[in-house]
Image (tube, rainbow, N blue to C red; front, side):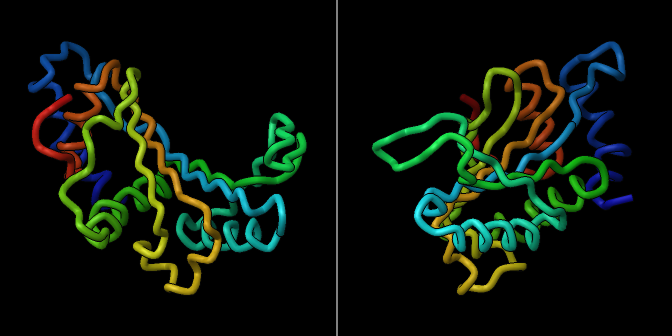
Amino acid sequence: MNRLDQTYRTKVRDELKDQLKLDNVHQIPKIEKIVVNVGVGKAVADTKYLDTAVENLTAITGQKPVVTKARHSIASFKLREGMPIGAKVTLRGEYMWNFLDRLISIVIPRMRDFRGLSVKSFDPQGNYSIGFSDQTVFPELSQDDNATGGSLQITITTSAKNPEQAEALLRGLGFPLEKGTK
């Protein structure tokens, strides 16, 4: 069992139940999955960018990504329906907790000029999204590996009913969110 998963099960769940005044243990918000997505616009012209993005995503997550394809044709971008333009990985279970632990303890502190993650990045359903334009904050990648030009998007899907519950969950897990709420 991962350190962060154990913290959630032993400490955070009980605190959330009291803090949110929930009656049933099944109402306590939890993290369901993490989706890591990278879009590579340059892949339209040259597929080596997509290959590099897939290798980087594999190194970061420990899972082989699925190549995503364009849904619509856009003539001004020289994009045709079905062309590969990105990659994504869905993490659940042990892989999810390991990735989240590394994200909180290693990756986020390595970000330049970091003052806390924005609390405005919650959607109305209680999911949280983070974007990384510089992928070299991940220790698995070297400075040379950021040649993809694509930006990394991480979406943390929670079972929270609203952004306030999700914020309480992430703060309880040690997520470095900005002070204050929306």
